[in-house]
Length: 413
Ligand SMILES: Cc1cc2nc3c(=O)[nH]c(=O)nc-3n(C[C@H](O)[C@H](O)[C@H](O)COP(=O)(O)OP(=O)(O)OC[C@H]3O[C@@H](n4cnc5c(N)ncnc54)[C@H](O)[C@@H]3O)c2cc1C
Image (cartoon, rainbow, N blue to C red; front, top):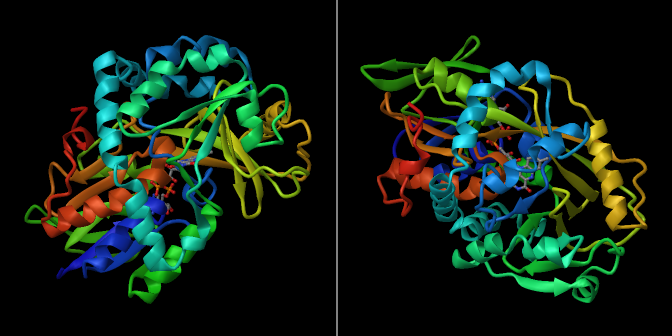
């Protein structure tokens, strides 16, 4: 392809956009405010969780919310000073919990994730990063068979979208993960699941590969995209002005600030999440594990065991509350009695969350040559490679084989 694409953001979504666009022959420049090694994409749980297509806006989630909010270190927290700013988003989020809205989200995410393993596979193979990816399934653990049975409808729904699971009793769980203690009584095995052993090494390695392929990286905070005769023309980052034929806004949780400046406001919130990585956990854990009732996950990574989760609404500026990360490690010890939680490295990241859990992917409704790729929420690593592939198809005029209507920037106008 002939022309220059400027991508705003070097999180895993922007990097995958750069990968698939460069493959098509575009000249590509990535402009990012933060170092590549210091984004939300670098600290996450590493899962390619293609089967996770059910949004948490559903009624069964909201029934549990009052109890969660009473627990200061529970799975959901709202900093009360932030509530007035959050309310309009919350109203839309609640509306996205209706039966028909949930069905629309499931269909949209299933469509995007359908090619996730293939697209990630293409990217890691060409970038020489296959050693970071493990495609060896995941365990879901419950404290009782009744709790697992209560989620049968969700598991059936995943199965209808092609994601199988094998129910396990306690013995079955222990056969796969001997370190699990008596709290793990039921669950299942999900074979179609993969995880990266080090998401930071993925971003840094992909960046090196892109540089070798001729992609230019520029540090700077983009404040505006200037247009000429209705088409994008120049990206402005401080004193820097970069001429562009196409622009992709992939600035994670900060993307709505840019879309608003471009006349396309979008209701985006940060769902802040936490984790701690234990360098010396004292036990062997070989599976990615979701502890379903307690809403946290554990990833065996190259640098230790990463334990994370939690949702905190506090906006983009509030300082992190790392006690949340440590509370998750203490919770993990209930399931893994031998776990050593000393020496953990705590981390917080901003999940870019749309009210309906469907990311924004596709062209601007106002400016020719402008595209959006943000709002992947809890599943931005999973959705990053398919999003990059879809954008490349769109910019090349190919059919992306995905109905982009639910992903539109103007769906809340
Ligand atoms: C605790 C936790 C665990 C998670 N686990 C998983 C998981 O297992 N699997 C999964 O699929 N997802 C997971 N996620 C979600 C995933 O991490 C995010 O959805 C994803 O990282 C978002 O990527 P991004 O590229 O959109 O944004 P980011 O990684 O936040 O990158 C945004 C980029 O935009 C740049 N930027 C912002 N504003 C500007 C500007 N004005 N000008 C220039 N640059 C700008 C930033 O510098 C950065 O480079 C998790 C998230 C958290 C918090």
